Image (cartoon, rainbow, N blue to C red; front, top):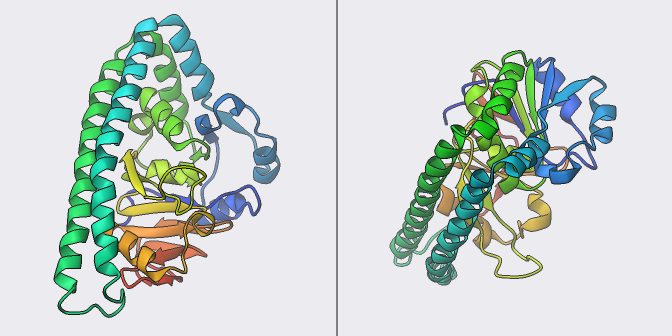
Length: 317
């Protein structure tokens, strides 16, 4: 697997077992630290726990209040983003119609064999079913990507965003490390796109993201929960991520949200997302990119045989 093109780390949730400070030290990452926490929405400024854990000062990009101010001054920008929201809902509804059918077929077929030792009669049908899921996910991701390029491309030229984007680019040019917190992954991604965070980030600047922040840094954002409070428990692609962590699907809170003891479900998810590295990131877990690929502490890989495998090094277990 190709390593990420910059010093980069994906971490599990930081609330109960924070490891950010240890990972930064292990990476040799240093300040000035710049924080993106727009996923916290209106609570973006509540950084007390992070202050205490990091033990150093940092500068917040304040994407949430910047965006709210831009919406207040620019009704056309607000309309543009709300129109994208409505179109996203329709794209997701269309995607889910086919997704439910494709998943039903794949689950029934996989139930006729074993994930680790497939029946030779059933295996070709399972391969076709998993291939159909991959095609559907790719198709939906491409449609969302096209909508994103259209919307964020138009938004980038708005006068209401011009000064904020310039200030953010200047801050990132002097950043030692970019920190990307969790929260609402869709809002986090949207705000980072609106203000051109990834585009303005120097190529060598280390990046560390945790929880939803780790998800936003990947190429494709997967929403997942085997037993959600409402609706079906079908994992689905939200759309493209920022692409700073290629070849990885990040699953924070995996042990809480997925039945990792169900080998059939694990195998189906891993096969559906192959050849990407599907990584469970629980409390205290980390996945760090280095010259030899990815190395992990605690993080585990979901295998196509239905196992959850630890000790990842260089993308292999």
